Image (cartoon, rainbow, N blue to C red; front, top):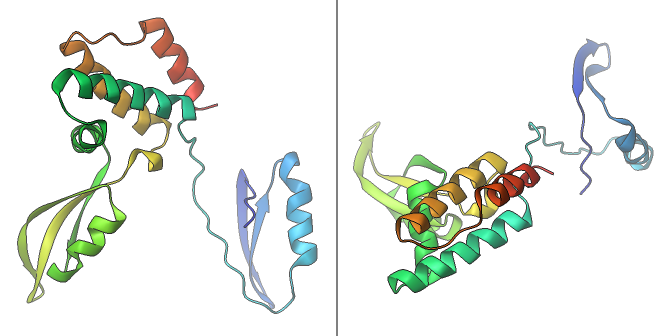
Length: 176
């Protein structure tokens, strides 16, 4: 799979159909040309278009687990159980309504699933759930909020965390 970033787009219609044109920065021009050149004519392709968001750095993820290890040791828990707790407190979630039999499928795809209770929608029984993504899916801002929450919990228990300057440095580097 190739990813080609773009910063502007146009759509036009003509006698051959609808055309989507993308303006690609110079570093993506060669891969874009190669894709078009190698693309078999008449075959259907898929393009996923979404806004680019910076992902959190591996340093941020590593620091998250260091903090969770310290916190787990202080409260007599294990870091995986604490991670799930922190995901519920500071993580990203969405509400969904699914058939009751589908709750197990949600548990497979999301880090934490909290059942909020049965509901009836258009005469059909369902279960309303709050589903939390794992931190590997977080963008820079979401990961910053997640770590800030864990840092606050550590500070409340007197657990040493990185200096404010180091935290600022790490946050600045998350988007790079």
